[in-house]
Image (cartoon, rainbow, N blue to C red; front, side, top):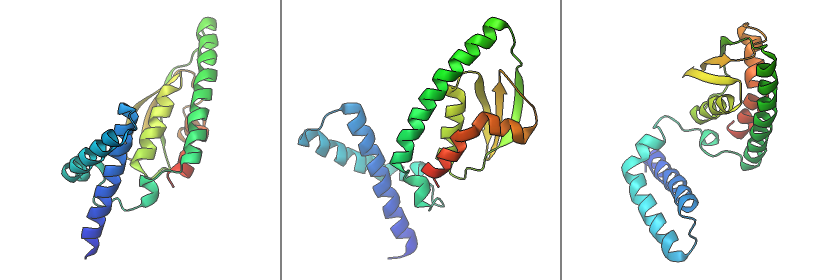
Length: 170
């Protein structure tokens, strides 16, 4: 069996796994009949769509299988940052001391899913909205801009998010 055929099988298996996880999450049924039906449907859908889920040249398993323990910590951190930033934004708006700017910066994340997680986390945090993601270049609207220098602004906006996402998806 050649390498391309093996990689195709791995892509189908991983796509089936992710679809099955979605099935269990959305149906919340753990009886054997529903699990069996979900597995069969996930397998057939993955045969038809695995090329859409995992690209042919994306062979890095670390970008496809995240580290769950860091993911849980990341989720808790995002919730905490959302909570703290909402009060900061409320205080700034009440005082009328906002300094809105559009900042440009780059990310060092290599995985597409890690980049999307970063942009989603930035957007979920009050006071920042990701306007564009183009490869490794981000454009963010920042309501309380401390600087427009790209490297410094990037560190203030993405901060610990990027470092943790690098550990989740190496």
